[in-house]
Length: 368
Image (cartoon, rainbow, N blue to C red; front, side):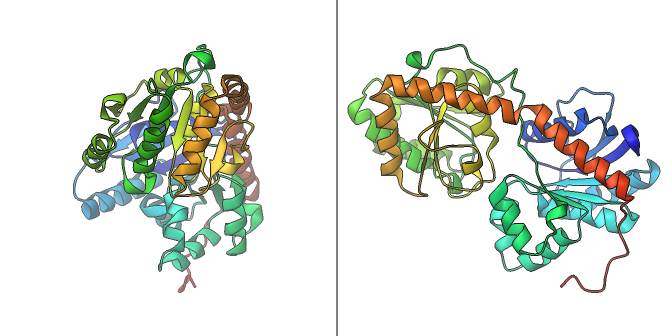
């Protein structure tokens, strides 16, 4: 396998997130070719990447086309390793392909697949599948420890940094010039609790009338959130900018990032924002504590406690010197979450699979 390992990955995710997660794999010295099976191409320009597009359509027929295409590509291209990022349903498809072809599989947990699906009524099946994978990547230590408690061998578990292009995410704007600009970035769905971020901002506006909030992203909650902003009397100071490809510009203009989610993995937006010196105030969800040292490079509050979040924002805006110091500390994440860190992890995973000569045995009669 050496440096010409052939990888096949089935994944959906958004175009930007999928490209971010796959780029370190493309950069790995262990990878010679990456076959990507999905509904549309990504923005990755590399001779290593080969796209196999199945097109959109209804869910079940589309999943069947993804599986059939993946199976055909795996056999025709003599693929060495299957990679499934996000367990439901794409990681499962990769696992089924591995069982069908006798090839090793790496399953990557990103967020909701762990926080929701692994704890659902069907979670025991998913945990059994994870135990039978050749390697499992997680977003941080808390997730790693939980999987180990479920019987996934620690030797199979790897913390895979959610790396970003740190050359893209940087800002030269001093914190003093952007402190009163708050930012939310993400999908507008209920679990993100953007409604609480709006309540935080309404409290901030009571003391700092010139403060403004930009909401980047779209989703089914947008109309309701715009209505809530009007009810709170802050609609004129809140910009709902929708989905944007130039998010780095907004990070560079904002002093504080608000993340009020009920559940996350390790959000890419945190890493991107901090790389630009934007100070995060986040709930204690997912593995964000691996990234945020509360009081040093950001603040952590309990899930649902928007008043505590508002208090932290007011604390920072009232102390420009502290905001500047925390902004400088936030930027230090660039050292840990650059692409090079994730590339090194993929190099290690794939070289270990190569040395072990791992392959998948025939499927057992029972997964219990």
